[in-house]
Image (cartoon, rainbow, N blue to C red):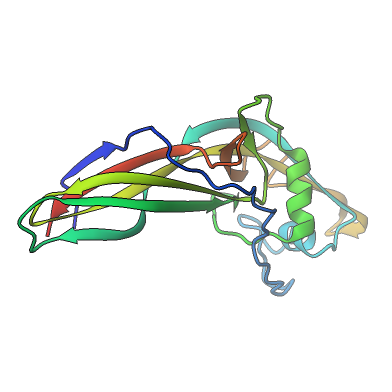
Length: 221
């Protein structure tokens, strides 16, 4: 049911996760070379994304063209709290946790799986943070956890939403083969100087807590 009201939660942080999370890689499924996983390319061109994912190219290099940080979309965190049959306000005090992982988009097609080696290749081409308080790391899963208090009126339900900040990087991939493939040693995907490859990485603060905004919403049962 559509939320009736939406407001940003209080900024006071009551707790953070102590340990920094280790690098977590997206599970990789090898697939087959005959199925072209390089979106936008025809059969007359090599499947450079598959080749880079499977170590079939001599080298793969990501070239960043543009990068920026922006607030992402809100997603609900945890299960809603119901006070449908209640006669008075229900006080809610819980730990709410949200996690986000780097996503890879090739030619505007998202959710592509990336192997460990290819993730390292992409990471090497992404600009590093110049801030002491804001960081990002390609391939990392980032988490935030806050203890937040809210009130659910009688006959209503409520829940929290979280919107993370993303470091967005756009660019292209340069692929080199040891011998000619489809007539060439070098291929530029999806084109030299283009922005057809996008890497979205969650931003985290110096304390390893994912950066973002919390929102509280209530609606009729």
